[in-house]
Amino acid sequence: MNFRFVQFLLRLVFRLISRLEVYGMENIPTSGPFIAVSNHIGRLDAALVYVVIDRTDIIMMVAEKYKENAFFRWLVRMLDGVYIDRFNADLNAMREIMRRLKAGGVLVMAPEGTRSPTASLQDGKDGASYLAAKSRLPILPVGVTGTEDGLVMKQLRRFKRLKIVAYVGKTFMLPPLSAKEREIQLPQFTNEIMCQIAALLPESYRGIYANNPRTTELLGQMA
Image 1 (cartoon, one colour):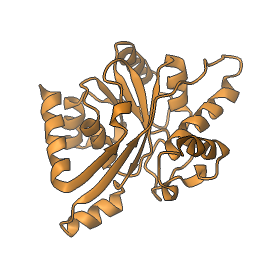
Image 2: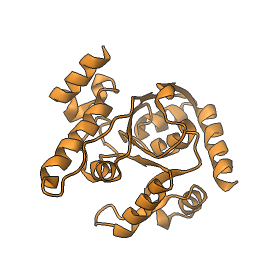
Image 3: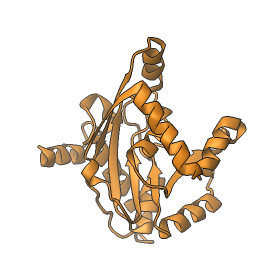
Image 4: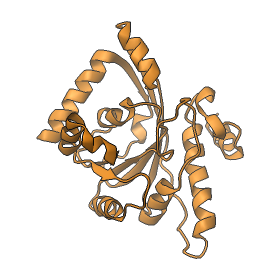
């Protein structure tokens, strides 16, 4: 009940402040576990997840710093988020995430680890690729535009609605992770994930992955 209530409120807020366009809704699995990965350009990105994905078993990782804010503590509790230490190996959080995935949940991650100050893609971290390879689950790439913090504040101050666009790609799988070749494989897996996201985004958002050969290959397949 608490989850659905907050989800309803978030959807109401998005209707009031934005014109949301979602392309590729048919690509979102309606059941079973999977891992959704996206770019991260603003604070609204996390809320957008609960608007687009109609599931009650969403696993959202939340930086521990938000424990200090009473409103965010309440929100994370209502949405059953998982606090994580972004700067150290948080084994307890990883165990909880894997437990929920095995139970059929949907993990949502931003492989960059933090918001991009330029709104364009930064280097992806290996955490998302490790969890995806370890769990052997489908990966759903998503590209988001229009949620940049600066743009959001500018538009709202002018009482103008935001134009937010989410591009949902097709799910894909990573090869099995080999213990002996883990250090080589993980960066390759991360590159694949980031290029899958980059190929969904307008060119100005692709950042360091704009000229990546894999991004170019994926764009060619979409043409």
